Image (cartoon, rainbow, N blue to C red; front, side, top):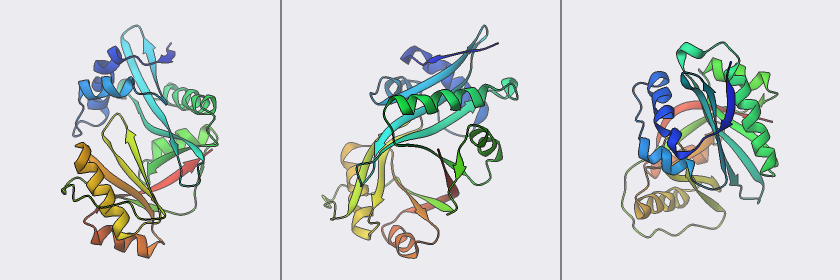
Length: 223
């Protein structure tokens, strides 16, 4: 049996252990995760068992360009030895409720199109896929040239269990992407990123011109 509870900064080593088991080729910084767990406006839940933490989910609040409050179900992982026991589904359900507690108008998860397990888990919790496929674009280089944020662009600073960075939303112009790159460099953050619909040819071209790189195909799942 497992119990769900909110994570504390001292749970960071256990979360790192799971991250390394699920994504062995990705970085897992214990100190950075501990700092992220102390950030306001988020809820990280863990599945606790006698042997230690067997799974976790991370969620946090963002505000859209239209002032809508969204709950981002950002990262879900269950240790390979503890899978197929309902832990992932329980974590998603609890994190979804945490989003409602933060008065979010919608809860959403960005999931790679080839991540069938996560898609099935959120679907069982009542999430539905957005029909429009997207691609994720990131920039992890560039100097702070003071580029201003253009009208219509919306830059959102975020702290996740994987990185600190800025998301680009709203009007996806070359100037918007360059402003995000400048903000990333100014604060010493890890990355600037944007989720762009594949039918948004102008946005895709602007990201490419601004030096961003496509790193995968995704789809929003929303509840």
